[in-house]
Image 1 (cartoon, rainbow, N blue to C red):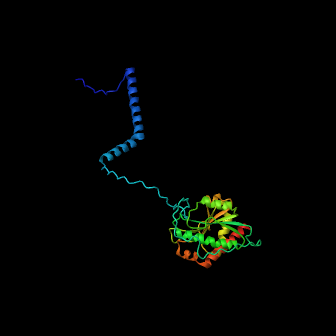
Image 2: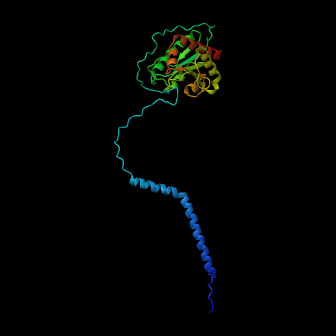
Length: 292
């Protein structure tokens, strides 16, 4: 009997047309896979996210409709990002505060007309910072009281002194303060600031000025430190700063943080008559060095 041998089957495509169609079909399938993978990578996450959001929305418990509240006018809050807050703003009708415009013990003394006086011929602008728009009433009153005493001190040494404000009952913008200084043709302008910080442990003094006035600023603050013995903050007592007051005056302008009212020990010093004398002597020595 003849043995039957199993023959292996081989795929044979002897028809050229059929082979071509087969190749085209393979290429189409391959292209479809490539396109499918691309769209899955490109749009799959967004599609899944949209589906998820839709399902969440369907399953979410509807929130009660809020009751409409009356719209209130915006409230202007001080800029707490600045250590010398609040920023002085223009207030057309400020509410008067219960503060003495001029200290009761303030007695103006006639300025000397002696041409040999050390500061004779120089005009100095003093800017007691804060005003009726500030919520820091005690510091506002102190800044003006000290500026008035220092004004007399400088006038007795020959200087002509102008103040940007002489009361605590109104608001003064930085632009208005600058105008006073520029109109008086001041040789130098000094803003006096008894600072307020939330941190009661912060102490020390420092001065702010434009970068181009750094040398003069350091002379002034170093003289103040030498006389008072206060510690310093910032870069050994100096901070480069640019604002309306420092930038728009026609003369070199400085903001001196004379101390921190919110620190009990430093506040006690600031209220001491002998210490105030040291403060004025230090500032006078610095101004004299800069101007002469």
